[in-house]
Image (cartoon, rainbow, N blue to C red; front, side, top):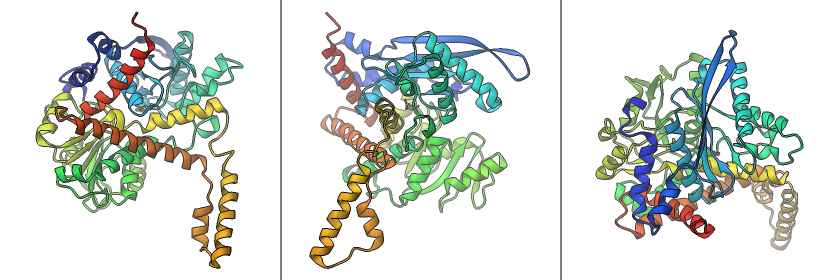
Length: 473
Ligand code: GLU
């Protein structure tokens, strides 16, 4: 994919930023500061592999902005990792956090390895060594920089990170907050795993519930009955497909790097996932047609296209073939600036990555708060709420002489558990951000697309913080 870059990824982000900055009030110098990557740590370290050979690993951590502390952003394991990519992704994190009012600066990490070609033991050694390199340079900590999962990493890697960090920082009471996306047993929060996919769903559902936007696109209001194509069946793609399907949309195609499958009656992501696990490929799924190549999935006729894999997959060479009405950027940077221009001309609505996939970092924020407060969400109030609801219900039953049915009783009485609160916080965040960005776009007819409106929103928030910091005497 990287050979299709029209620009470097970081340059693409800068280009989108510049396109938006003219709609803001900030002076040039301040805009330059918002755009710049503050700290770039490029490292090389040796790891002894299972066969006894020593390999030098290339890795990065970039802190794009410290206008708020700590910095926040995932760590990816991929052979395509390079400094430019990590810088771009760190920048997007700053803007993403600003839009959803998560009080962090942006950061990102990357290790240039193919995790599928490594043993679990090798991955553990690489992850632990990377963490100790971060500790040595003061590039990690609950108040400094807090990594999380990204492409090619998950709970397992986060558990290794928190364990390595804690062992190097004995007695640090908030050590669990040095990384998010951890397993529950290591201080994780319920609801983090599905957070990005669920956030994408909430964001797109909100857009689909806007009658004026749907009218412009020639679509009916609501997600029900809409056809959806998902590229990528990793954690994000899987959960996007799941929530769209559960809310009445039809996931007509799923693409992975080995190929893509299509079924106009809809696919079940869990069955596809199990099929891939058993056969090693998404292809030949019962009842579905194989597409000649994976990229063709992006060009299918559908209502909603969800690229949930890597950057630059829709670019100058294929943008003209896209037939979707809405593109929901679940991945970071799936469209190049050229592709953006084509979509704007064609009237295709691009719902931009830097807020649409912010569900992950939003719930990471909840996890970090949980780690600092050392208490599970809902622990204090759940029973109180249930007792209160029972009392109210009994009063109503006594006064009316009627009895509420058992299933209704359970719903009414239920006191919020951790996962309920996390999902509710996420829903509120995604709905709020969607409306805020749409309002900026609606209020300025000169703003060409939703991405630019999202950048305007982000630049204004980061700009306000910098300006109020008074760091430019
Ligand atoms: N890697 C995710 C992202 O790109 C999550 C980052 C986080 O939770 O800090 O937004």
